[in-house]
Length: 498
Ligand code: FDA
Image (cartoon, rainbow, N blue to C red):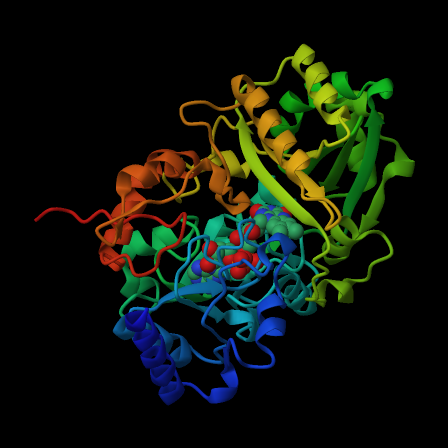
């Protein structure tokens, strides 16, 4: 309509006055598609019917981000922000409903500065976690950071929602190690921990991206690691006792010493136990011999390496080099759908038998399970918005994949049906989920009178945040009462009545 055309034109003029032309990509720019696709992970959100941005802004400093917010508000054009583009629902670069919006793509804001003496670092949101890990290892191989496994994941979205990886039992989630941050708010102000205030600083560490403003950078606490860590990967098929071992794993893995993390990945009829131990193979053999002999770990399974070598090893395979974790290129050949659960009571053995029947179906996906306990459980539920703490045994991620040759409906249906089957065996009231494994099937926002409804938000919000949802909504009410920053699953503003 004319009104939105006028606001779009006004927005583009406003941007051009504040930001160098070469940092703006409108839909008619020759590079628009290549910039848009540059970090898209899931091709299902890059189709002719995908609602695309009016313009992509690629800021090189904070003032460009501030100007974009000011121009957006003046002209009634909303913004989505993208760091690494890994959002499972593509919310950083597409809108599910028809809407005029712009994308602020932070991929060029990616400096990391490590203070080795203080064991801290400032990292820009557009950095990938692979780049962060690499920069830390260049300063010292005895320092690390506890965050996710996939090197191309962006710091901006990942830290906003939690950030979980193999160091979680020893050092918690990425958000547990954030000391400060800079944020551009809905008024275009550049704030830090002091000026954004306690509630907003609490909210951006787990309250998920896009609700409170645009986080430009994070100051993090680095953590010590030994000169060598020990990795192992042991597959066990159902015929080799996978069901008994998994049944035991549920209770053992979350209770092991914090230095040992053993995740389980189930595909078809095989459970693979993948592990990192912050110590030597000899010490690990002793520990496993007493705590988890059923897995049958022996010396030939052990691979000792530096912590930074473990990053490509675990995610890219044993021929990958440390430099490979700097590669930002994404392949975009796998369509996928995911969702998640939390388990607080071990699943009985006969249910595992049924689970393996589900996983044997031709259209089946996989289950990835991360044990908690240790440092993860040491924080009270309200320490950060991420509420899955004491009492959680492990997290399940269900994923299914398909190629362009099929429409994915059978695989999506399998995921949905299996999720329904799992209901009695996982956390309840609310059935918890991890916000970084975003799933719009858990619920979507409803906008009433130009503001996101708190009631509708509660449906998905309690799953991701349990009792922290209300405090998140109050923080949103403080920093963005007009609900400028919103998407299909952003935090609704609750404004305290005066
Ligand atoms: P993206 O740029 O898509 O942003 C995600 C969300 O955050 C969007 O809503 C976006 O608007 C918002 N956002 C982004 N930057 C922001 C900023 N600077 N300020 C405010 N809001 C911002 N998770 C995990 O914990 N451990 C793991 O090991 C993995 N592994 C993994 C592998 C693969 C292949 C994928 C696709 C995903 C994961 N994840 C994960 C999940 C991942 O943590 C999650 O998708 C993150 O939100 C991705 O952050 P990006 O910056 O890449 O995404």
